[in-house]
Amino acid sequence: MAMLSACGGGGSGGTPAATTLGGTAAVGAPIVGGTVDVTCAGGSTLSTTSGGTGAWQVTISGQTLPCAIRISGGTVNAVANATSYHAVAMAFGVANITPLTDLITANLAGAAPGTWFSGLSGSTLRAITQNQIDTALANVRTALGLTTALNGADPITTAFTAANGNLLDDILEALAAAGAAYGDLLSRAQTGSFSAPVGFDFQAAFTTVRAANAGSGGGGGGNGGSCTAGQTSLTYAGGSNGGPHTDGQVLCFTTISSTALVFPGKSLSNPVQNTAVTAPFSAYQFADGAFIYEVILNNGALHEINVSDASRFYGQWTATPGGGSGGGSGGLEVSVLVNGVAGATFNLSNIPAPPDQASFCSALASDSTFASIGTSGGGTLVVTGCSFANNIGTVNATLLGTIPYVVTYRYQ
Image (cartoon, rainbow, N blue to C red; front, side):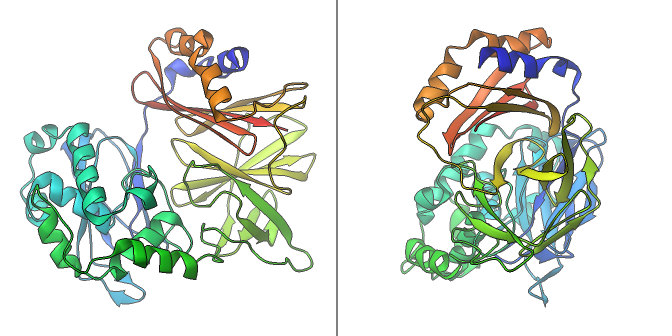
C-alpha cells in the first residue's frame, strides 16, 4: 500500500483548488428551472439555473468561503415552486439545496433563512464556522429522528440524484410525508431547542418510502430485473460510500460505449476522454450533473464503470458482483483522483485482498509513506476517511488543506 500510494501522489502539489460549486436542488422531486443565487464572504454574487435533474453549478472566480446559497422559483413535478430553500457551503465542490439544508440553515441562523439570506454581509458569512454547521446538522438530525437513515451522509455535501431509490432523495420524500407542514418544521428549526411536532413520524414514513422505491433505478436498493436481448447487466459495489447508487444494486445498461452511456433514467453523451489511462485500457468520462461516470474499456471491451464526483470516488459497476473471501492472491488496481481529476492507474499481480475493513484501514494508519505524499507536494496530506467493501478500498484525504485526494484499491 505504501508503494502504491507514493506512486499516486507524485506531481500533485501544483493541483489547483476546486473551481466550481454545485449540487442538486430537490424536495424529493428535482427543482427544475429554479434560480440559484450564491453569495460568498468575498467576491461578486453568482447566479445560475437548475437543470432538468435539479443539478446546478457555478464557476468560482475570486469568491471566498463561506458561501450562502438560495434557490427560488422553478417547478417541482411541473407545478410552480413557491418556496425558497437555502444552504451554506464551507468548501467548494458539492453543495445541495433541499428542505434539509434549509432547516440546517435556519438552525444555524436562528432566523428564517430567507430573511437571513437577504441581510447577508461578508462579515456575517466570515463568522460562520464548520463547528456551527455541524452543530446545526446534529440538531436537525436529532430532532427529526434522521440519524439512522442518514447513516453519516451530510445533506449538504453528499452528492445525490433526485430520483426514487436514492437514499437522500428517499429521505426528502419521507420528510414531506412524515406528518408535519414544512412551515412548522422551519419555524421550529430556528430555535436552539428544536423538536419535532406531535404526530411527526419520520421513521414510519421512511420505511414506507424505501419499500415503495426498492426496485427503482434511481440509486436505491433492488435490482433491474432480467435484462432484455442486447442489454448488459451490471452490479454496483460502493460499500457505504454514498453517492447515486446503493451497494449491490443491479441495472440493465442499454448502451456502453466511448460515445454514449444509457441505463434506466439516464442517457449520457459527449464524454471527455481521460488521456491519463493508457493501452490496453481507455477511459471516457460522462457527466451527469455533479456525478461522473467513467467507462473503462479494455481493448474496446467493457472493463468497469467508475462513479465519482469532483471530490471523491463512490464505487463501480462491473459485469459480475464483487466478492470473494479476501484471501489468497490476485490482482490489484490502484487509481488516484486529485481534485476530481483522474491520475495514473497502477496494476499489480499476486496481491491478496485484506479480509475486512479494519485490516485495510489499520495498514493505512501505520503507513508513513502515504502521509509523506503531502510533504513531497509541499504541504500536508490529511486522511479524512477509509472504507473497504466488496474488495474495494477507498481512502479519502485532503492535500494542502483543501485539495480532495482519493486513492482507490480494487482487488480482483
